[in-house]
Amino acid sequence: MKSGPDRLASQLKGNLPAVVLIAGDEPLQREESADLIRKTARAQGYTDREVFVAERGFDWNGLLTAGASLSLFASKRIIELRLPTGKPGTQGAEALGTYAKDPAPDTLLMVIAEDKLEGNPVWAQALERAGLMVQVWPVAPAEVPAWVRQRLRAKGFEATPDAVTLISGRVEGNLLAAAQEVDKLALLRGPGMLDAEAVAEAVTDSARYDAFKLVDAALAGDVPRTVRVLEGLQAEGEEPVMILGALLRQIKELASLSIEIEAGAPPQRALAGIWERRRPLVQSALKRRRALGWQRLLKRGLHADRVMKGRAQGSPWDELLQLTTSMAGGNAGR
Image (tube, rainbow, N blue to C red; front, top):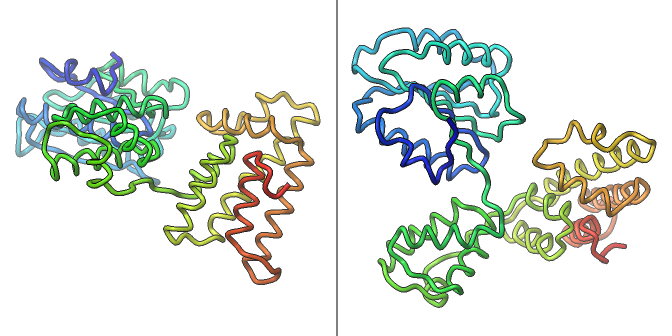
């Protein structure tokens, strides 16, 4: 059976399933879903908890052994398995499929895949048939204000549209940061009416920038956001050379893909190695430039590298501004 974070509470009423799979790359909803399941399990007498992390070299036989063994401390227990990459590998998929066929009695197996599932893997289908699958999807930018408003109402606030807009804009789609700001408001002000002035006084700018967000903004062709994220990186003291490295890797990939497609390769085949979630961004960028354009942009990036290493004159941050706005399709650096 499938569920979502918004329906999970109602679906946990009654006896817990023997197996729960939580999968998705949005950390706040994923971890809050796991917390709700743990809380519900404790209320039903699951007082023992054993945690496994399936990193490289993980012993999958150990998981099956743990499921087969009896708890010495409680009649009911939780076995929690975390998949940092969202993929258990061949051996792990077999182990999970084996467990799902015959779940241990008085045991809740909670598998937390910390990434989006690619396709519909057989092991995930097996876990879903044995119990419950909670799919966690990132909240689209257009949906963030409604999410913030709902979160504020849950804390007792009746927020004005301007207050919701202010919080949504400051957190840059980061739900964890948004939740933290709402919790902070609840501590500082208490429930009641909330306007933009009160938000401005109480919250701090929680937008967290990193090089990957900069690359994504440039790929999407969003010049204003590209500039804003770059300014955020500079304000946070990030090293220009680290940012440039992420940009050059992406530009090299785009140049290579453009050459392959222009040589006659079907776009679907050329993009097969790109993570599914990133394909729309890459496709958007490829539409703005041909292979020669990406090669010229790569040369600009190599010039920026020389500037940062002191082999050419210029400002590292000015070079990054020209490179990223050009990558996003703006006029700077053309």
